Length: 307
Image 1 (tube, rainbow, N blue to C red):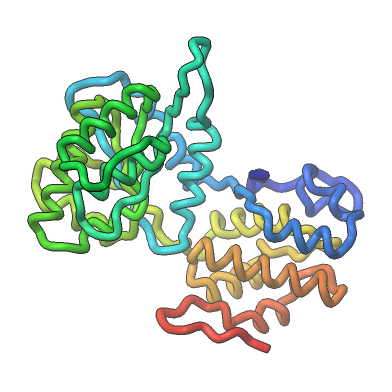
Image 2 (tube, rainbow, N blue to C red):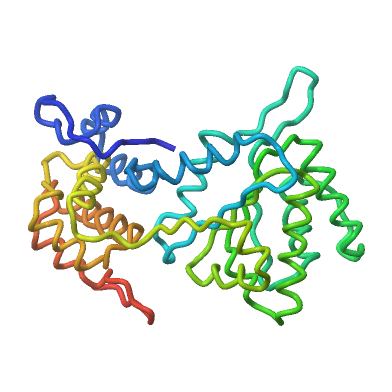
């Protein structure tokens, strides 16, 4: 995953608006630059850094009987999964120690489609490629999950799609949350849930759960200087030969109006604009081009492409 920080670039000739790491790409073919747009990239920004620092501090806490847990919530497509991937890249890459043991500091499992204790254990075991029998009773699967977490010296367990635990009867929800609490106690590591804002409701199944979790929201972006810095950072990883001045008040306002302040939608909008700017030879994102992509505006219904 390539990275770029949302900071201004020093004067570097005709491609000063592009991050130094990607300036050589400006001499590549249109096909190569279009392919580059499909590669995953990390855009550093203050809000994400706070979340990464919080996760790292939680991971580095000494083990104790009652570990603090965290719930990261935000709108769909607003950067939650990318944030977790970045954290894994920085702090959780698996390795083999001097005794040839496989070490996995960060385990990222996905919540089952509905509240199901066995499904939760199976999702964790899948991360280790560990053999298991789906017909085994929950107690046996829990023992296997605890064993693997200890064996691989996991230091933090992240459960993505945490809001899925709301699906199902209240008794099943309580069972899963009690299972999560038991895992936290037995292994002695923090557990991080990641999901939409609805995920907070899962904590209210029992006051004990709410007292164990801190909630870290990732809100939609407002039209402010921080959003302009974000756009400046995105522009630095777009392989366009001409500057687009995306952080200017006018273009920032247009991008925010179309994306609704959603990070994923803003990034897709600018990526699609860059693709068209390369294809038609304009090599920059203009106001007219932005407005022509207004069909990318977030919607709860079906979004039809503009032809």
